Image (cartoon, rainbow, N blue to C red; front, side, top):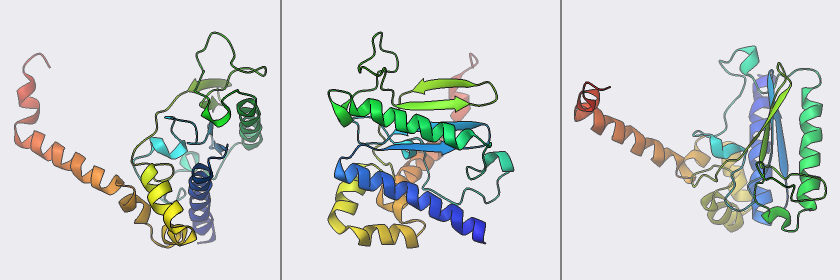
Length: 207
């Protein structure tokens, strides 16, 4: 039970960091280390760029429940968390040296570095088994549970800590408030409508 509570608290802390950073328009970076890989990225304060949670279609949940050891984000290789943290620091420093600061676009594929320190990518994904690091760019998600306008403006800025308290105590609150639950319903309805109209039969013999 202690491990599960710790995992739940970790997920809540990650969301709070993102929400408060976006609300204050502050530079922030997040690192997440798993068993085989690490993800590092600047937060959703950069225009049109997403945060760590923009790639999820579910609200944060217990990361240790019903998962194998290599799927638990609370378990990692000995040096990976320090590598990820160091990259997050360097990303923030490079962002601070950009003329547009937290408004800097992602220049992962730019021919010339945009700061004296080099590139300012949006996200880095490192794979320890192959010692490879990829630079990625992700768009902001309108139903994100951490950086969407609905959560930051209508939720946190309007109600402050009371909003966060509901997010802590009600597991489904963020998913409903952000519009993610409604998006799931629309997707399920679209699938049912497609299957009801014949589904694969309409694709023809070419498929």
